[in-house]
Structures are given as structure tokens and as C-alpha cells.
Length: 238
Image (cartoon, rainbow, N blue to C red; front, side):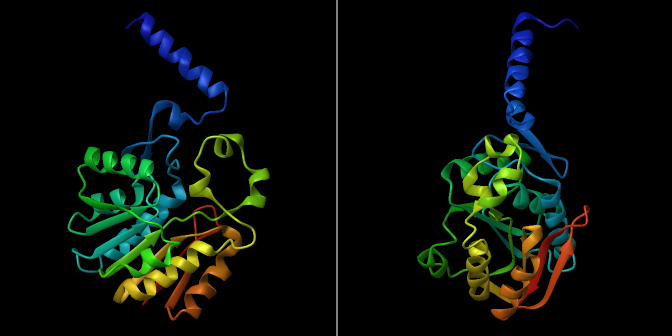
């Protein structure tokens, strides 16, 4: 089938964007996460394979729990984690928060497109007022928070630093664990007994993250490697 003039113009436009370094997923407007097609734009991170591994860990454990467990995803971005979980474990009651209204708009569209029912809410996990304003408790809390230190930016490609949202990527070198402290503080009050907390981490800071969780009273703290052999995720139980 021959391309028409509009098709050619579209393809040439795509090529020009790719030449400028814009990630393919943003050029196409979608990315895949656990065989689920998700809308993405510069308001949200492009889902990574390591985050699929984090979701798979949660899903595997959820299947051993009550099917109707309550789940909260903190910093949801495109909604990939809660959508992946809800698709695999439909009875789960899944909630998600993000500080970005633009990200939440994308996540809501993705939930609708994937046929998953997720309750989204705007919120800043770094705000003590927000953390203390919740009454609901959860069986599972999961998060892929910002964890790349700004000093690491120089070693990253322009595909990432020029296009993906810095709000979702970077933390200061002075306090690179700021989100893990806030998430641990929130989870200590909002996890049900027997509940678990799962986080994706900077490969260089695994021990420090486990120490935060242990010091606040979590037990069975597990540091897990990804398929590349890097310390990439932590699970802690309440």
C-alpha cells in the first residue's frame, strides 16, 4: 500500500524529532508496560523495564494475599504501576497520587483506555499536612519516586535530561533520600498490619534505603536486584 502525502509528511516529522533527540515514545505518543499500551508525553516518565519488575513483585505478592487488597501508588506518573497491578489483579482496590495535574491527566486517560478502575488524587507526599490528612489505610504501598542525584545528570543522555520531566527524576545531592523518608513516614501510619511497602531505588543507595525502613520500625526488609544485577528495589513489611 502506497503512502499518501500526509503519511510522508508525518513520517518526515517523526524523523526530524528523532534527529533532535526526542525519545521515540514521545514522538509516537505511547509506550508499552507489561504488554499494556500507555499514552505518554513530556509530563510523565517513559516506563522502564525495572519498573515492570517492581510491579511484578507487587503482583506476585498480591496473589498470595486477599484478592481485594487495597493498594496505593505514590508518584504515579503515567499510571503504569497501578494500571499494571489492576490489570493483573482486578479485585484489588487501587489508588494513586501524583503532585502533577498534567501527569494525573495522562494517568486517568491510560486507566480509561486500559479498562482499569483506579482512584487518582493530587497530592504532595513531601507535605506533612498531606501525609497526616489521610484516614484510609492500605495493604500495599508502592512507589517509584525521584531518586537520581543531580550530580548524576552529567552522565545521562540528552534523550532523558532534555525531554523527561525533571520533577519525576531528580533529587538534590544534599538529601537524595528525601522521598524515601517521607514515604516511610506515611507508610508507618497508613499500612495495615501485615502490609508491605515496595519502592524502586537508586542502585547506589540500597543500603541507605533499607536503613531508613529498619530505623522506622519495618521488618523483613529485602533489597532486590533487577535483571541487570543492580540493586533496584526494596520491600519492607509492617
